Length: 157
Image (cartoon, helix red, strand yellow):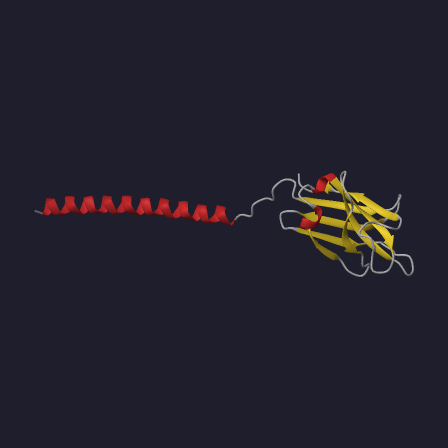
């Protein structure tokens, strides 16, 4: 009778060792999955662009960042100067298309614009800044001279 108890106890110990090992493997697997799920995903290629907008050989007037994944365009004025009594207006110029106004450039603060304003393929276009009457172009297209321009380049590897 003692021998039966010992065998039963040995079987029970083997069962619990295997069960504990199995549970440890499951717990480690779940911890690994949680860790992998928490890692940030890299952005999709072709979603982030930058443009340095300047005049002929001058210092940058604006730095424009486009993130199509987040849906934003950030325009940071650097050396943009409007002539007295005039406004500077920023335009997106798609390749082979008509310019689209993105608003007036305010030297004192960055501008935020929706990336929808430049369409699905921003890399095929560029930016231009024109001198306009106060409040911007009355015609929906540049009416004054374009004094700054720049192309978009991808920031993604």
